[in-house]
Image (tube, rainbow, N blue to C red; front, top):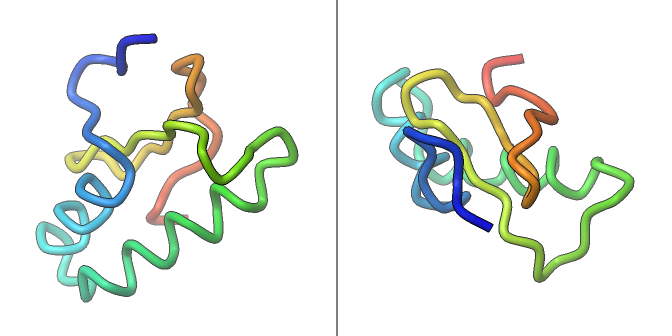
Length: 70
């Protein structure tokens, strides 16, 4: 399924969000993976994405599940 408009691959999007928001990119990536893991429906291979502008995290269906800034 196509990513929502403005969303990047999870790792890349989280790192870029971190750079834009004065958060260490590695910390932002780890935060993304924790939030992805916390989503009860996720599996490691699922293609979650991040909007580097807003920090929103979308599941493979394009539904927003969380935000890196929260």
